[in-house]
Image (tube, rainbow, N blue to C red):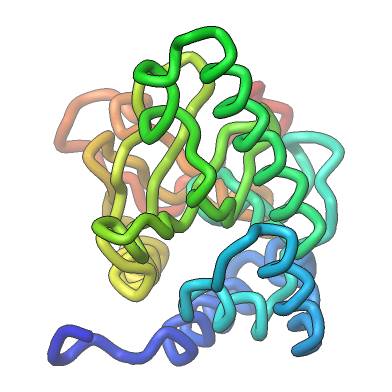
Length: 219
């Protein structure tokens, strides 16, 4: 771990504390950590050992309560909701199915390692089914990737989860953008975070910090 970067547990607690104060709906959506036995069930279902960042995260929070609509809280990770063990296994099965279908159709080069891979462990999912995942491939171990349906290839957002949490904490605390497509946090109705692409705010130099959208705004 890089010098000066706090541990992952400390960073999650910093983020949790911010949510509790500023986005109580999001904080209330967090589920308790999963018991140790669930890690083995998850590894057995995946077919390989979990990266330590995944076990640390699940040990703190086994996902969030299921969202039924975009107006419900719980999508505080760039618009994605943390998955529990069952959600991870379900999303991973979908990735494996995509890989198998591509191989049967002779399109492996267009799919494997680009939009799906057996060694991607889903971390969070948005209402459309797009994923944030933790890469478990040997040369990419621990990277945080984003897979959006319709895009020809996934994007690497962070090389490690601790760096993701550093950026997210700084972003919510200061209203600064994160990721190469600049996303900024906005607290909606005093209860939950929404992430907006910076260009939605108008000119490139516009401030983004904590301007709540008008009630009923369609986002």
